[in-house]
Image (cartoon, rainbow, N blue to C red; front, top):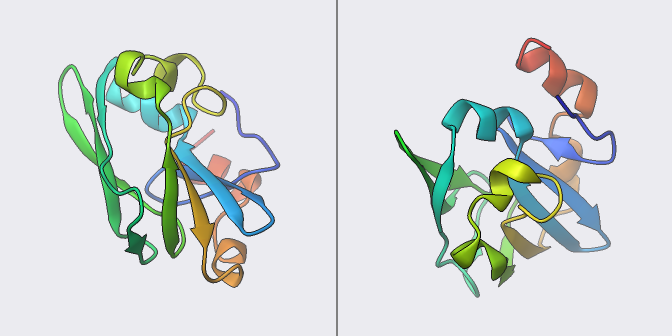
Length: 126
């Protein structure tokens, strides 16, 4: 299982990649394995300003639906358009083609409070 060291992680299994004040967010490889085959990604939060830990969408797998939580506060500026036709990208490439949203963050210090790769790896028992 991959735990890219350039990312930060939440206890709810989202990852975040910070580039300046823009962050890309998705779910971890661990999360997609736990969910199983992703069949639908439902995100309608573009343009919305949300606080850290607020729900920005849902992901539907064959057996369950799971909420998606923003790791940090900010405004969703882009939703991955590929996921409408290809939700399986979340399973096949969770840290690449399977990204979910890009956001403009309002408080960069919130990123520092998230788990690093080593801490997240411990959390999931790897």
